[in-house]
Structure formats: structure tokens, C-alpha cells
Image (cartoon, rainbow, N blue to C red):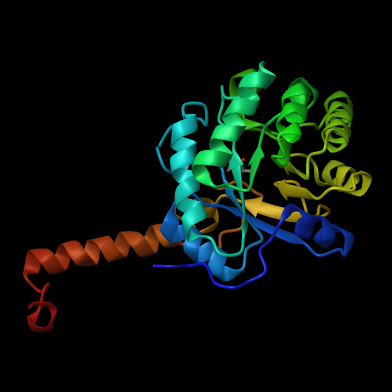
Length: 271
Ligand code: KIV
């Protein structure tokens, strides 16, 4: 089953051009072949193999438990599905913090074994050395500031970040540092819309928001959330484009009913 049609692939340069031309960038998470195939076919610019796989695919409470090998498994499934989109892969917790050599080796492993096109890391100046080292290997890096779920035990909650002046000004400094280091884009998660708009205007690289308002260069959502698969997660920033929880539940119930009643399979559904 080949999906490699002749289309113009999205690259980090495409995203830069989109920002220059004021064209908004669309990004969704993806973790498996079948879903990624549909997302890519729909024309998304970027598929993020997010470490949110830890939550939505594996059922963990946080993103901390997912491993490098598990991220590579998800990312390689997505890469096999994709024809056009840029595939960005999250570096999981513990694979880059505190040791830039280990960060480089984790990034190289992801690129070699998954076929992904870029990596993403959470943090600002504290991961600058890792960012610079990874970039020297020719691996494009996407930054991630604001609410950084890998630091949930430091924050204590998932509430909006950088509402106070001090944290906002640190975030601005971090964003500038990541741009200067050579990141090709930055995700801003759950921060005030005015601050996100200011950062997007300040930087020349694209800024992609989640819960960061419309003044940025693009938007990202977790695919299971926007499809309404998980009906227990309803933050203000989330727009649901479907209610798949209900639709899937009814389909499963209909199937169970048909099996129990003997209605399935019928005369036409057998050999
Ligand atoms: O892991 C993830 O899904 C993310 C997005 C929320 C940006 O990092």
C-alpha cells in the first residue's frame, strides 16, 4: 500500500514562508498510521507525534512515563502514513534534560529509527545547550514554552502560565534565545493571548499556539480532543469538531446488539 504520491512536501522552509506571507499554519497531533493517513490527506501542514501519546494512547496521567522507543514506535507509524505533512517528534521526558550529549544521541535515534523530519523539546534557556548541539547535527528543532507538561510536578497544575509579569518576561527571553539558537518554530501552550501575540510579532520564526489565542502564526490541537473522543477533557481553548465518543459508543453498542441477536453476520456477509 504505497502512499508516496507526487505532492509538494511541507518543510521547515515552507513554514517560514507561510509566516512571511501571513498564512496560518495548521498542526495536529498524530500517533498511528491510520489516523495520520487521514490527517495528512486532509492537508494538514504539520503532524506532531506528541508525547501526549502517553495520555491519549497509553492512558497515563502525565506525559512523563513514555519512553524514547515508544515515541519512535508512534513516530515511525506516522511517517509511513504521511505523504505531504512535516512530521515533528517530541523528545520524551528524560531523553534530553541536563545532558546535551544524551540529548543529541536521543535526537539522532529518533531521526534514524522513525524517519521523522524534526524534533520538539520543552523548555527555554535551561535546554539551550542541548538545542544548539542537536542543531549542529542538522536536525531541525521546534521549541515549546508556556505550559510544558513534562514539568507538571514543578508547576503543580495545568493552569494558564505566564500571567504574572516576571514569568511573562522570562518566557519572552526564552523565546528569543530559542530563535537565536536556530529553532525553526516554537509552540506556546496555554498562555495569555496578548503575550502570545507579542511573542509572535517579536520573532521571525513561526509561533504555533495551543490555548494561546489567535494572534500567533498557527494552531495545534491534540487530535483525540478535537475529535471529541475523550469527553472528559473540556478546556476553554478546545474546539471540538466532532463527538466521536458518542458516535463510537453507539457503533460498538449496535455491533454488540447485532452479534447477540444473531443479526450479524447475515446471508450477504458470509462465504
Ligand atoms: O504532546 C503534545 O501533544 C504537545 C502539544 C500539546 C503541543 O506537545
